Image (cartoon, rainbow, N blue to C red; front, side):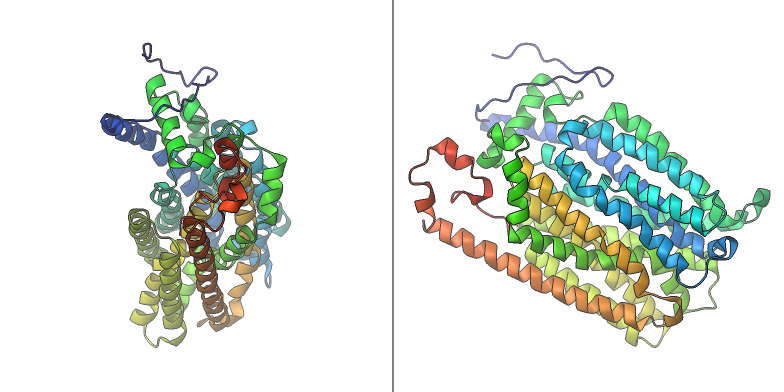
Length: 492
């Protein structure tokens, strides 16, 4: 019988609670749901805001462009596109190392610490005086923000089972979508203080949007927990319940060896073709995400050049709100039905329709509606893949390495995306939309190949065709095989 429950203070060094293999009974169901709600309240709102501010600080340069950033800094030709792209040079370099060593870096404090760092850099970007200064700030910003997204994905897998991840990951996506809406709203409001105290509106935009990241990072340093074992906001019995949920979800993830970093698991990630396929899928999908985030104001302005800059900023807001709603609806359905690939394929098709409308549409209503069709699938194509892959990798070392690989290759799309919409292609931007249509077609194909491969493997394992691999192994040794175990069932 357990002794009196104790809580861990967020202001003290966090301690751990030992895991146990005792099964949860039916009577524990209500208690388990209560624990999950408590974890949700302590994790999801904060990571949503953190990611929202990160995306806001990275993409506000697109809003600033309409307020004279290029003119004030003397940018010529494709220098604006280069300033957008250079951010990803340092961004992608951080992703794999940060996920591999996340547990050793104290996840909660590492995530909070980089938020403080990028908030300071983003704020000082509002004071740059030339192209070189802008490039330097963008490089530093990429270095600070690079670890965030992959670390958040790995962090969520510490607390949630694979059947719950799509909706919880939806909150990270919500942060990205809200950043677009908030950025448009702030840009709309800040447009009215252009020239105040001798500062152009784009400088006000950067100076105002940076400091909240610093404040939120300081708060997160004390509020977040590193793992279920160190969740200060739970009693010891609640922490035990949370750990048991993970063990019950996947036997292959419950062994002591599976929970720590092994060199063999890291190497296994690089040898798995499926991880490379997911990485390419993310690269293709992220080209659409980054081009949409940075150039939506420019695309909408081209639909009707007579619209004022302030009005264009306001028109971006509904698109991003709709993108968030669409992803949450799909994420809920995906978790409920436990299907991933089909939703990724459908999202590709819907976004393709939107790009076709922007190319072929001959009136304002059709083209602006096309922006909503793109928004319907923009986060789903990439988001479903980001959730789908780690749920099929029960061992920590392989999972953390794979997430880093997937997002490093995926976000490197940010280097190419800015050049798809050159200034000279206005108003139709045919090249950018046509290339994106082709890439989305490839995304749909890769989703289909991955689905077929995993379904085929599941059928073979269910029929016992891989049992020869474990004929001489104990149950413990079988569990150590991770996703290679004939008992492991892929989520599809």
